[in-house]
Length: 515
Ligand code: GLC
Image 1: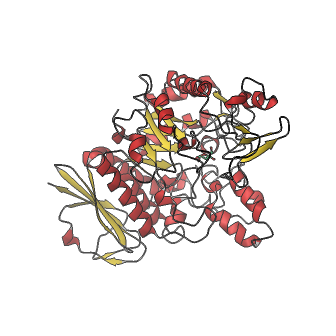
Image 2: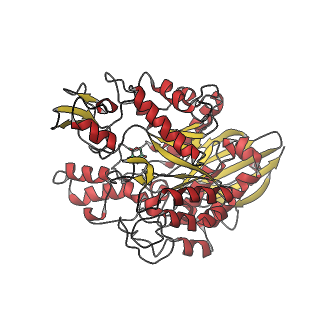
Image 3: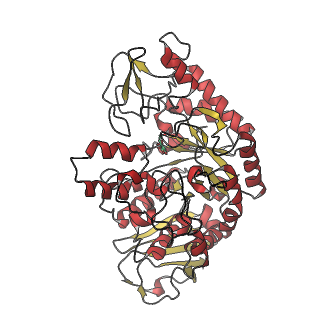
């Protein structure tokens, strides 16, 4: 497998497709949409956790790494699903949540029962907190536990205790989890907050001294070295990317880096970042990884991010245009593209007026911390803009309102798969074309990335090998003069019916030149 040939689609199982109407997405639902994904053209999926979990953090709090959540299906149906994906030419990677378990995991239930329990050292306990680390979801990361009178570390929710990777037994257990899923046929893993598994208690929470040793121990083995592995590594920003995925390192295939998604001052803000700056960061990251000879990923969305079209584009007047322009940037860039469910339909952020419409632990904690301090309307506007529930609402397959674990999209009637696929201006069909082009043109998968222009008006880049040069011209919202003479190649397609001397809002154009 050449990882550069892969085009990923992320499935968030709980919200993807509910086949039995119980309000929870399930394995049979996923199976029923494999045809849809094949038609879209993707050749790999990342399936977010649907293991046994109390769902405090929506499946990222796992209570049994080898069991499928009973509302989603069972192990047999899950393995059958992997087979069907493979029969359709689609690779499957699963989430590997290595930093923490659920507090309902057997290991933690044992660990918290007494100081002398053999599982005690699977987690991180202290008589007093050794630092002032904060949980990513608010409050101290150290939780006092009455039963044994000590504090345990939870970098995320209180119900997500961090594993102690210094303990060789933990490392063996986690290797066994990886091997279990490899034996079931999976092609790799997306490794949740992987750069946090080694701790430096004197410094920041992440990127500890034994991190690379631990990753190598996990993925540098004969049985695992050919897997596709992508680490969620918030600390990657610069030359350290080479440590994670340099060719000779025996660690990961690639990483998710987040610089281009960290422009706002925190998660819950209503100001929009400048698309120019987003693209500038995206371009510089690709150029940087290219120079270092490492493989990067490209993405605008995932289950932790608000909808890209609302955040970076214009989800009212130019929804089709801006959704497809963002799609063109992702799908023609250097690296492995990752699409998030619904992005291929231009799904936008819904708007709610009451906190009861939200579910995410991060949003609810933020609300509780700020209620009465920040005016209610502003608080809700912030959560509507930045909250993770934006991406987690039930996928709008058609216009029928859905009763689900999380309140439905407020705009399902306007935006749904059935409607978009038949529309004259179809986001789905434009994504299809872009994907087909990426598959047909080696230069888009393996060629050089050349950034030509990033200005307040737009983004222009080329991908180039010995035979071909493909150029993407992407205008932002303000119409701009366009000099076609500058592009002497053949015009392939774009998201407007005509090309004139003025680029329209979010117009993109793809040119191909034989060299
Ligand atoms: C990652 C996941 C996120 C989760 C967190 C803790 O960032 O993507 O959804 O809440 O890790 O597992």
